[in-house]
Image (tube, rainbow, N blue to C red; front, side, top):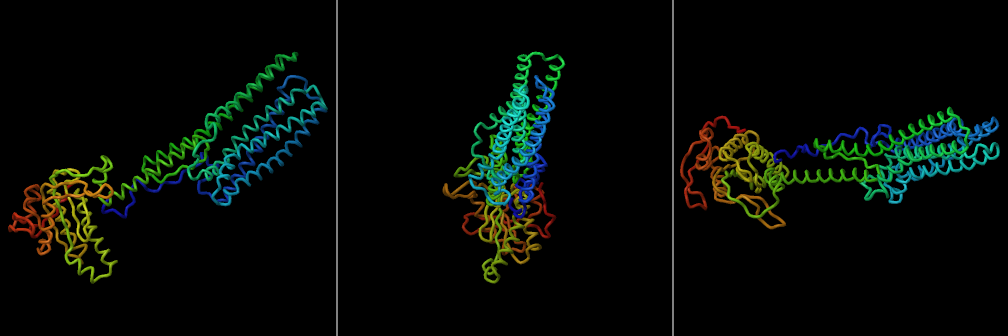
Length: 534
């Protein structure tokens, strides 16, 4: 708004940082250092892979010892399998974790060194969770082959219990490894997608993710339950107690594992949606500088990026509107934005106020340019503040003069009253606040044509008519009057009685360029208290 150029518009004020930009406080703030990011990612990845494998080893023990129908492992078989399992799990954790973490950090080197990624590095970063999961598939596939071979050697009766058990546990581990690593890598994914990518989601997107999680959390466990039921029926000799234990344990595993997968799935879907919801709520409160970290490679990431683009567009529009309003006035800007731009104008009853400095040529010749600019800014600050406060429009600045209109582009019923009150307020403030300048002020009223003139590539909103010329001529005359303020008596006739009481009519003069005389009106001496319309 004119007169408030030093104020930041409320609609584009700075946004507070998001409390959990990645959907969890474990992942840290968006502005964390590269060292903190590296430590956080490495810790979470290592812990998630170890946790997934420990859970898988526990599932193997429970299924093999308690659940799987068939011959129980002999003491010798138990000893061999336990020792082999311990050695393999420790070795797999060390080798697999070392290889997986090393490869991942090599791919993520750009993120922990603070540089922008290449297109290849962006793609490789988004594939890290899948690569870690494939590493677990390889490790558990090797485990299935190794332990099946051991079972054949030490106790063939354990077939097919061992491969089924390891296969089932491998599914648990791989599912958890994928979900946990994708969660741990959200801050890095956000950096990879920092320019509001993806342009298109990963193949399959959310639909494929939901189907995959259903298969891992429900399909595979239930299929395992069916296989074990088939083994029990095929072998026979399975007691009621054994059947009950099998159903209870497998049902518990299915429930727990299904719940775990469902929780991670829901968090993977809800977290991006929640970030969008929070951002939109902030936009509603006017925080157009808010940005959402885009850390999802599916349609949800596109949704996050879309909101960022929308907010950026709103902020640009608000800045343009603010700049536009400062140039042409808030009312003109609002009218143009609401109804578009049309050339031509319409006739309005309006009052015109013209204010012009006296001796500006001498002022410019005797003072440094920077001092002249500062003086003009202080002069126009008084003019703009009073005109705006009285609901007028500063239509244009003409060098060291200003043209204001009351009653256009929006109609103002008491435009004459407001123009006279604004003129008196300016005349009273200028000698006190800007004593270095002398300005003449003229006020006239009548029909004017208000609208856009110019060319379709460059135009301006202005008012044209006899009141504009009359106000300019009155300003020249006012520079010679003691109060530096002259109005046409016609304005008094259109104003309220309360405002007219502040003025006194005087002589009739023939202004330059006019054919009829104008009755002058000047503020009464001493000037009464300035009227301040609401």
